[in-house]
Amino acid sequence: MNTSGLFCEIFWGEELSEARSFGAEVDTVLAAADERAPLPLYGFTLEVEPFTLARRTDAGFRVYVPPRASVERRTPGGGLEHLASSQLPQEGGRGYVDVSAGELLQLREGELRLVVQPATAAGREAGARWRVAFVVAIAVAATVTLPLGFLLSRPTKEEADALTVRAKALAREHQEAERKRLEALYPTHVETDGGVPDARERLKLPSSITVR
Image (cartoon, rainbow, N blue to C red):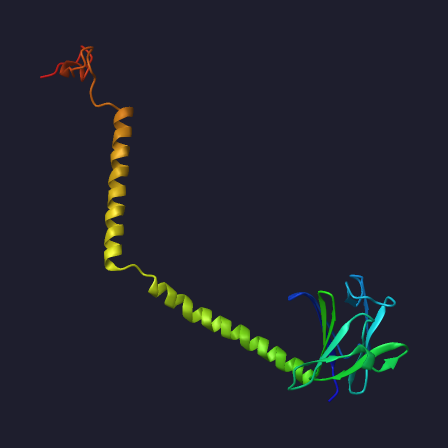
């Protein structure tokens, strides 16, 4: 089965630091310790830069191994298998491994790990369908769980009664504070020097007005 592309992922320990995808139009994948390179490959010993990491073949890709990197390959249905560098076939003085769809190649140097995997168009479409299905599932779950969470979080009758009592108490406190503020601004009586209210001074009228 012909491959349509090559996927490359670079890990620092267990953390993914870079991921690149090369489509069917790419026949040669170049790498260098440069952010502008098609595949930025820091931390690996490269004989020359840019370094030819992979070339397309009739069956998949030929991956060239950096001189100080260890190699592991996984075939469909199998686990990772270590490949001794002394046993790798050579081309132009470089060891290489041919990989096809369904296989995975892992190159390690120090804490860095480069995972290379050819993929078919069918595999890419299946992955896209899986991602769409995952997003739809998340959306459905959110639609169902949000109203349910609201219903589950409704207060009990006792809690609602307690909230009502507290609200009324706060309202009374606010009214009392407002009443005291208004009394301070607008007193309803005038005190004499002795501090006792004098009814005669509560209302002062002009002399021309007779009160009966």
